[in-house]
Each structure stands twice: as C-alpha cells, then as structure tokens.
Length: 312
Image (cartoon, rainbow, N blue to C red; front, side, top):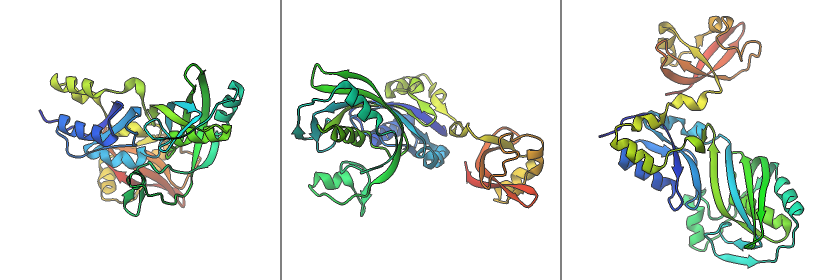
C-alpha cells in the first residue's frame, strides 16, 4: 500500500548505513518519491535522523539550522586520517594526562571556535565531495568555519583498554564531533579520534521518540505507519501562531502583505506585543486549523503586516 503522507519521520539510524541509504530504504518501503533527510550522519554513527516527505521537504532548510546533542567516545593516544575509528592509524602516543586535565580540555572548547572541516566530509569543493578527493589521495585547502559548542561535558574515563573518554556535546549546526575529538586530543598533546557517536537530539526530535527501520516496516504491514509522522509545523512550535480569516487567507496565499494589527491588538500573538521586531516569525493557520506557511510580522508606520516567508 502506497503511503502519501506529508510529514517528518524521526528515524533511529543504525550503524553501517549512510543517511542516503536510509532515505533510499524509506523511499522503497513507503512508496514516496519526494523524500530527504535533514542532517547527515556518518555511516559509523547512530541516532536521530529526521527525514522529511512530500511537502514537508520544504522544511529541510529550516531544520538544518537547529542545534544538536551528541554522545561520543574519544579514544586518546591514537590519531587516524578520518578522525574516527574507520580510518587508517597515523600515530600512537602514550597518554599521561590525568582525569582532571582531560576534563578541563573537554570543557575548554565550550563557546565559539573556528573548526577546520575534515577532508573526509561531505562538503563540496569545485563540485566534488571532500571525501571523494581524500580517497583519491588529494588534499585541498579548507577554510575554518565558526561553530559553537554550547556545552561539552566529560561523563566517564575508561583506562582498561587505552584511554577512552565518554562525553556529551551540545552544539550548533555544522559541528564535526570527530574533529572536536581530534582537537581535544591535540590540545592534550597526545592526539585522539572519535570511536563512537550517538546523536541524541536534532532540533525538536530526540532519541526517545525515534523509530527504527524495522519498526516502521512492521507498522507499514499493520497499516499504522501514518502514526509515525510528525506534521511539518511541529518544528516551528516555539513560534507564536496567527489564524487568518477567509479574506485574509485568500490575500495571503496570493503573497499579499496583509494588515494583522487587529490580531495583535486582540492578544493573539502575546510574544510580539510591545516588541515590534522587524521580522518576527510566526506560524500561519487557516480557520480550519491547517498550517499554511511560515510568515513574519513587519511594523510599517502604525500598523503591523504579515508577510510570507515560505508556504507549506
């Protein structure tokens, strides 16, 4: 049975599959052509992988900007060419750091810092993925990018098989955790690489509500797979909402900026009153409760207008 659901699936990606493998699997399982993921996970990594289908694919650009939460294992004293355990060993070194020194180094990366994207990454340079160039033995110049580590916390150190450090990292988009692990190892003077990675949360989606591919297959057989989808407005729930009457909706759908001063005065958008932000984002709904678009409020003279940012 073909599933024509528009929405977002919170997938628990298994190890050994690329993010594109997961998308291809779901395309076949659900019979959906328009489908894409919102944030690549390396094949060795496991955890939350949001996948959008149908009209919800329009939301991918907004989901990519969201923060992430990871649990990672850092193995100190061993560096690899991929900065993780799948690569070739480049160097080994005795680890003489104390637990306190390791904990301090892990926490020292909190805040904004310029991170150099790894060669083994999906970034494109002149039309080719960096990992494709790396496999060919070609290294190219990369520019550091500013990312932000909101928190970096050491959970546990295991010294029974080398020195392995378990840590939780809350970070901004564009952060490479394996590069962070390598940078921590470099700061400690012994080197290191990422030996395990679990994405616990990506924006609004966390691991507790994620579905395995096997679970979705079973739900499909039972005719229950629609229950696994989140509606596209779920990712915008932190925003205020506005409901348009029929006249407003018709004009708005024609991309006309509409006067919503009365909506503001009635207290419908409590977070906005008194702020007058130039582009205050809101969820836009019809009288029937259907999610229409992501819009923004704009004050012009003594009135407030609603303009469209993206229709869904």
